[in-house]
Length: 168
Image (tube, rainbow, N blue to C red; front, side, top):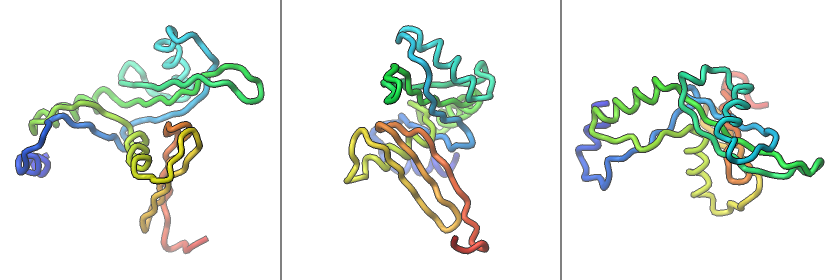
């Protein structure tokens, strides 16, 4: 943390609040659809449904979710589209302690798909609302793909590119 502390001390920043973006190996980001339930039950129903897709002890986790009601095209039934993010309480406590050590205040923690989507979406001059989007980033050894629906990142995948295999 010392290099970060030196950078912070070298400038007069307007705030000490920071937002940390968690790499995919430190968090879980899932998208799923569930049956419609009244809004006042979301706090209980959404995590219960998420347990079907996320196999991690929720009592040792911190999580948040976003819900968007919609009508299914074929059945015309109302359903809920959910984006659910989760990480360990230990990870959050460690990050918070580290930030305090260097004089910063942890304002928020988010998963990488949210951070990357916001960056790409803000810089995308041709972005349109309410359409599916795929953002791709390539390096010499890796390809990263971010899929979004209705301005919500639903899936982020990294694909390793092996130069010895050549182009296919």
